[in-house]
Image (tube, rainbow, N blue to C red):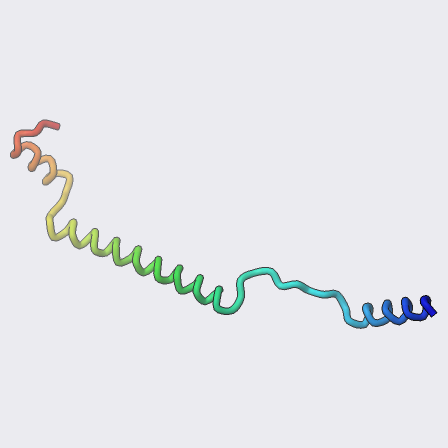
Length: 76
């Protein structure tokens, strides 16, 4: 009797096939991660755009910063 039960269990296990465990990020976690990465990229682009805009509006250049130091009496 125990041998028959063992044979029956082994037959059932072989018919099921190997169990595959998924490893990774799925569902809402994956969507949130993509959302945060996209938000971070947008914030970086906006920050760079505003920095460049401020530099252009204020006319910051290497020559102008040296000129300001000379006018204020500071030496290099």
